Image 1 (cartoon, rainbow, N blue to C red):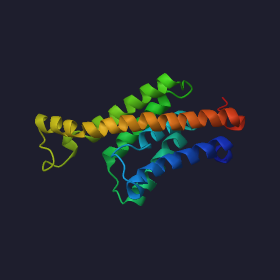
Image 2: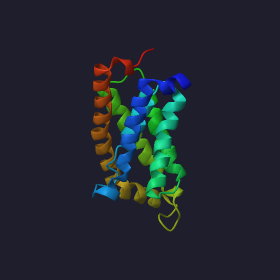
Image 3: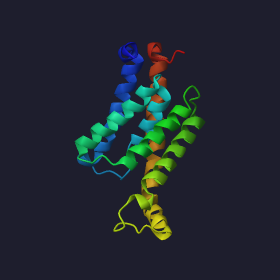
Length: 178
């Protein structure tokens, strides 16, 4: 792992992950659409690009935790569980990165995140009753956030994967070698 940390590939990936995590601070800087950030794309990107599975999981989780501290958000277990599933979606396409696979992994990750984080029984009964109706209401109320996340994942995914593809072509030392 020490050798990996010093590699140009690892450092480049880390910088891209940190830059993407900074998009969560947009509400503090400029008006922005809720859930239109790079955080989902970051999870899929990290999962698919870091050679080491632990780094693939730790780097985006650390970026998420750091941005949560910066924003004053608490640690919400279900959000991190959904985020972990998004990283796993990226790991699933490792060594098979293509526009189609990135698209499918991004959609699957966003849907999993949506299903995990908006399950009504995870909330207090004051917010949504712990009934079938409460579950349905939770999902319906979250649909605009899902839409924004999907659009953000597509836009930022194209930026992250496209930028890294370009950088690998320009600087072969960061290309993945098996």
